[in-house]
Amino acid sequence: KGKVESPNIRAINKSVVHRICSGQVILDLSSAVKELVENGLDAGSTSIEISLKEYGEESFKVIDNGSGISPNNFKVLALKHHTSKISDFPDLQSLVTFGFRGEALSSLCALGNLTVETRTKDEPMATHLTFDHTGLLTCERKTARQIGTTVTVERLFSSLPVRSKEFSRNIRKEYAKLISLLNAYALIAKGVRLVCNNTTGKNAKSVVLRTQGSSSIKDNIITVFGMNTFSCLEPLSICISESCTVEGFLSKPGHGSGRNLGDRQFYFVNGRPVDMPKLSKLVNELYKSANSRQYPIAIMNFTVPTRSYDVNVTPDKRKIFFSDEGLIMQSLRGAIEKIYSPSQCSYSTKKLE
Ligand code: ADP
Ligand code: MG
Image (cartoon, rainbow, N blue to C red):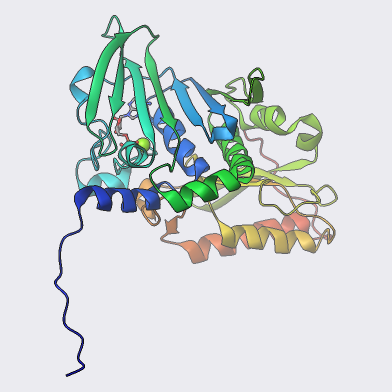
């Protein structure tokens, strides 16, 4: 007596599961737009435009000039775990695309209203596609468009009431985070023209980011941050092992930035923007020995074999597991210490192009 009855275990309704899980893949505005930009890059685009309405709260769209999507893929395009990028586990070891789990479009369907316009080089016309919240294709009609793809998401998070309120309340913060993320792609994406614009109220579109699609990181830095900032950076080229190198730029000792907002440090692994909190901490700590009042700007790209790290650690793919993290951190410490120690003034100045 008094014992609680054992409840029955039942399966959760599929569409509810979908909604719950999608909220873990798409965390905020920047993770949503990131997925679409990465899809554009994976499709070989040389031009990607991100167009926001009300800072992304009302809608956002990503317009690319990549391969387009062929009609035989329309039905499965937004189904969960449907991808053209991997088909078996070993494929992950040689992954060269940003995407691989086939979750982004399916998750965006669950969280907002998704439409796609796309055309491949084999089609004379484009097709406009509408999907429902479960990822099913509900409407298909012909339309005019150049080769490439436009994905539009309206009212992100409208299916998650609590998140939706938070989203509206924090929209300016979400927007700032998005711009910082787009800066990361603008720095690293060689030969891809990136444009981002925002429309609010009855105002005309305002362009918030525009790059020329240069093939050098140096030019991209000048475009994004300006010549003044670039001239305060020192090129960096570190060879950690036979198969692992790091190239990039670091603030010169006397020329940091007053801010430590994390929006001036960019880390990449084989051109993939990632979070590296440990490395960022190390860079800040070493910079302190040379300049205790400011924080360094840091842009570093690791070139490593695809089999030596795992990107499938967090749903947003921003975290990386390196198999030799210890060695990497140790070598970086040595190399950066050399730059910032007052007694040493010779270091590698190989140009990064
Ligand atoms: P993933 O990128 O992990 O494969 P997504 O849900 O982001 O999963 O996309 C599903 C599939 O849709 C991709 O594998 C790709 O074939 C296709 N796709 C999505 N966006 C584009 C695009 N902009 N251009 C061409 N194909 C696309
Ligand atoms: Mg993708």
